Amino acid sequence: MIEDMQQQVEQLQFKVAFQEDTIEQLSQQLANQQKQMDHMTFQMKHVIDKLKQVQVSGVSGDGNERPPHY
Image: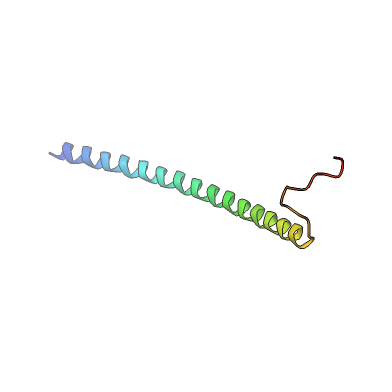
């Protein structure tokens, strides 16, 4: 009976160690994804600012005009 309880405790310790490792891995992945999202947000804001500058400058974006070399 004591051996069974000892075996159960060892199994629980193994499960806890595995869960702790899994949580650490997930935490690291979440941190990496947050960095990627921050970078993508910065890039998107930059693209939006560029588009606003193009719109303000009056550049036509309808695509119907031929380039000057035609």
